[in-house]
Image (cartoon, rainbow, N blue to C red):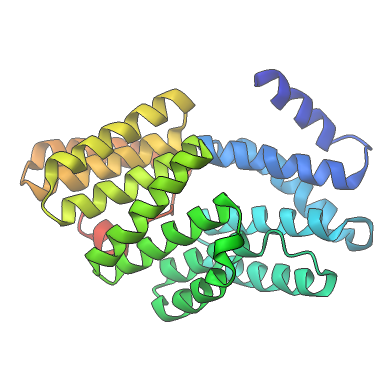
Length: 273
């Protein structure tokens, strides 16, 4: 994979077809975000932004991919309003071109931004749009619908509905065979099981999160695993373990520039401090 990453980095800076360069930059940036290399990922992000400006030379598919990935980076960095604007613009471009393959992912991104902004109502509207035709959607689209819907219900402290959707997200994560999806399912289930008082099951999901982080070499997933560890420790009044895990998370977050993430819940995060 290191060889692919080196070749991909060279390709996006070459004079190759701009669509190929932009789509390669999309996957390269996604890789960097998944493993928590935000600083390195900016190289691919800069290419995406530069190529997206040459609107007439880029296919609608490549353009929407690039804008979605840019919105993703912006959301993770805390630019929620900018992310939402990017979502709107990308969907307008999809409507103009008739290329809608990424619509559901783009809507999920907008819903994530709205959840982090505290706009639960608008997040719900976006998820309703995402649900249209869901039975015919790709596994990834269905996964992110249930994942984000569970996140919204947990923000509303509707634990039963959160669990229903998160279980469906976990089933879909298994079907995709994608470790990053499995990590997001495990994170949400750990939080839900903890809220239900099922501490043993919550710790099992937390342990799985650590295993995935180690296998992927992902600092981002490791950061989220430390967050979960802190939540679980404080829940059982183990202040020493909670502070240790929180310190590990904050140290890693400061080093890597982590701010927001999937399943970021205001009440949960403020409760750690």
